[in-house]
Image (cartoon, rainbow, N blue to C red; front, top):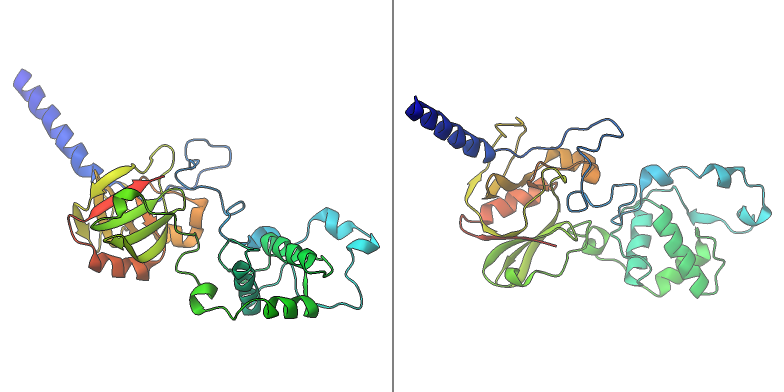
Length: 290
């Protein structure tokens, strides 16, 4: 009887280890007020409503009640000055505006093409420093002034390789072939001998299923994989720590940082990850750090 118990216990441990290797998947949406699935700072950072990575289209698409109800003449646009870009607008011209403002250090986030609160604040600051009416909306005079003191944005400036700005590499990333993954900037940098080859945005696990930090190595790869626990697809999976892997996440692509993984490092750009998957070899270094 004792021998049978030992055998059963051994089989149970082996099964748990096997399942752990494929345990990643997106966290399910839970009702408001539930604390069990709230992403930690290491997991999702700020939500899209407060994320510093872009102007928030849903929040900024309509004015606040206090602004819409105000009858003050000072809050009304001048009848002699016509805004050509303003809060709530969306266009490629706005993307260029944002790229130029970033050149001039009035914006730190990547261009989105949507004119929200961050663009309004940047324009207002520029106008105030250049003797223009600080309305926060771009009129013809403001646009001409911005164009005169900046250069035409490049393709990379208009559409940077990542929405999030890449963090300074950890010292452990400076030698060899390494996926350098920063929780602070929420980016993955593929580096070879200290040089960045490519970058991409990533997200992490929730506080209940955190992504482990440290130095690891790629243990095995699977181009087409499905979690055996959560039954969710994990394309281009590169496993590095007891079932945690870098892999593409359709949920991340759709919801952004509103969700979280069950510990894996999610990538939302499938094309970039497919290219990285072909370059990374088993045994390559993986560094996850703050």
